[in-house]
Length: 298
Length: 311
Image (cartoon, rainbow over the protein chains, first blue to last red):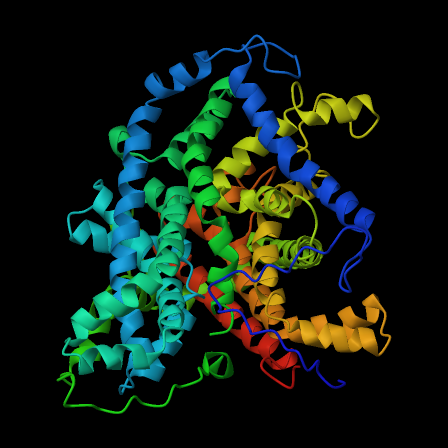
């Protein structure tokens, strides 16, 4: 490549999305495609993304038997029916419990492990990192039988604890790699400076590192929540009682009924989507930087 | 695999006994919870799967349980046509899915990496299906493919497809129908990963290329792609493993049907263990799936020269 520009911009820190300055009107920046090359394919792709969302919203809001393409007259009967008759109220509570517990456990355990990986060299570190990577190849779905036996042994079948544990374990590897990369981005000298000022390791970590990790931890916690909220097989296998089931299992039973009640299915789907959509709206700007902080880089 | 795991080691921090009396045990204490959880709920189950694969193990027929040697494997490879069918379908599913997801995901990432009005909203909207579960994806597409009230009916009005049958219950349409449903959720994942890496390409390179008069196509070919190479190789592999293993979507969308047409190997394993309670045989199939995954991953990483001379 040729000589670099002398006026080199200061590289942005990894955890801030570098926003290229908006070009002045009438001036085409060097890296810009013609407008239609952006808007046309993006528009087509947006249609593909949004039509399915619109469809399920439409079915959930229009009366049964209606074929209108706008949800008018609007009705909330399907939601009422699903929430009470199909016990989605109960499922929703269970799913929230599983999601929040998984989020807390994953974040705490991964934070401890991630700190050790980022700041220490110890004997089994390499082996442990390798184990983390290999575990990505282990499908939870294929371990159903032995996992079922372990939970049966622990008297945990039919308790939400089994699902929370299983979800946490399968979230851990990636979360730990992510968090250790976030910690590596915090200069070690900051911590050392705090020790010199008389903090012990724990206090130094709490005062110096933790505030800087906030965006990363939110991203990791959100991943854990979204994944456990969406996961289906563990709940299907380890929970037998109706009152212990989670939302995906409820959706599945709506779908596999002999005559599918489309309105109820759509309303159930909307209920399943609302929390993750809120979480997603909240974290989507961190999603990209979260990954660029090194999920792929390792 | 070993190459992929090679992590740049930071220089060991100097031991400053003066400032912080850190016990030698601390790192071990810190990773203990994670290590114990993973040993108990990942490593131990994996070992039990290997052990059960050599057993006849069926809780509903306890009188036949016991050591079986390699009978389960022999049965799979010689007497079980379903096993071969599911293996072939798995390969087809993974190759088609991951290939298309990479193609569209890369294109999408390149588009939303540009500066344009409404970029933030556009990004949020096209990435949104990433957060949606496999079961919800199935629910959405079951509504879309419904023969009476789905989008497909309107398409039939336009002469695409036919009335009366759902695309999911016809053997000739079920594969593309399932692929499209899975793409809807899978493409954003790829786009997010690639976009993350795109943002780390130094702008100077493009400016230099611009000065040298390289076209945008050339810039993409010589700057962007080499830079993305490792990210693409790794995310393709992770996604392929994930697509192979994931059963949520197909289980709820098609149930592996019609007539076993869309049954992947993991789906077959789930059915064998859950419905038929044939744990020994399911474990043998799981072992085969592990070996295939590991072998394919090694070959793939070797062929793609991961971590080789990029940039």
